[in-house]
Length: 88
Image: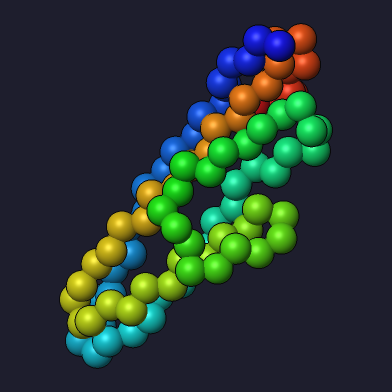
């Protein structure tokens, strides 16, 4: 069964604490979830703080006053040539 990758999506979010006091910032994101056993979805993300159902992920980051952090996210779908997923 020949396979090829399609629909690779990546993103980058910068979180900034604009306050002088320390805070914990949360970033939520979702990756595609396969509905077919022949399609494979690989997460191309930094390890989240929490993984929830339906592909939802949460990153929580404690940041001191004025600090920033970057969260990289993404996914890649691999599928058989004869079973192309729609909507990518």
